[in-house]
Image (cartoon, rainbow, N blue to C red; front, top):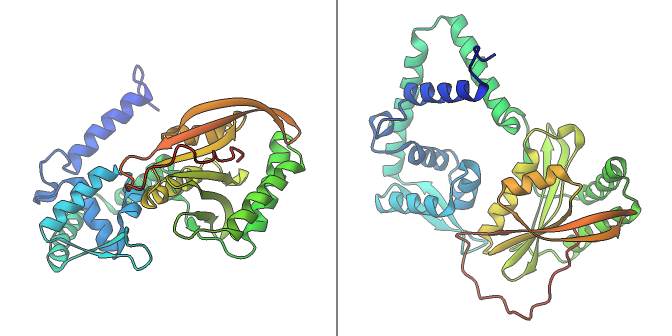
Length: 327
């Protein structure tokens, strides 16, 4: 509990000030190196994931694409990274450390390990165990999905589309009283995705937690420069762990890599948790319309996200047919 007269936010801010001082973030170079903390984290991820793409780094580190691009360009100029084009998509580059980069990272890694050992050195074994458990608790509370072992976002396999349709129908009937026409709509969307799948511009992710399916999301092509997010779903028992947010972030990252300039989605105002995720990801509400669907009177909503830093494609023709706004 926070001390009398001090609210929780003040305690968090005091801890943040302490921790930034404790691990030396206020010094110009991290661990007496020429790298900032962000630069060191980028090098670390490239070292751990040889061949990682910029899109993957954006999602993992929550970095602005333009900022990340500038940092990678600096590393490239300094001879720290090597780039190779993807065999599947020439617009995508895979990053790895050069020999010079591996040497620089090894120095960072040694100093980081030494610094962690220094912080633990004067603690008893019992105090060390308590500190480690407290750190795990902080991470699990502030980033719930990180505290869930076995969380995986993967491509669909046979049987997954049936699960997507079944679980949407059952859960939305239970939670909102929607009838079977909603399940039929989900079936149409899933069938179209499979039958007309564009591997360069479209994706579906199935979220698994501990080997069990707990969520899904689709990104489909609506127009040359416009993608559509569809069928975001998280099992009720798995909610509150950041899985929905992770799915949406993965969708946005892929849309940016694929060259889309905008992502749209259609939802209904009663889906409050989903709206919160969309707002947090930067979507803005552009249109609302009352309608009667799935056996209920609803308010449909169109949301849009403009993608800064997306690849430049041929401008969209003004007479292009408008996409269907259903989920």
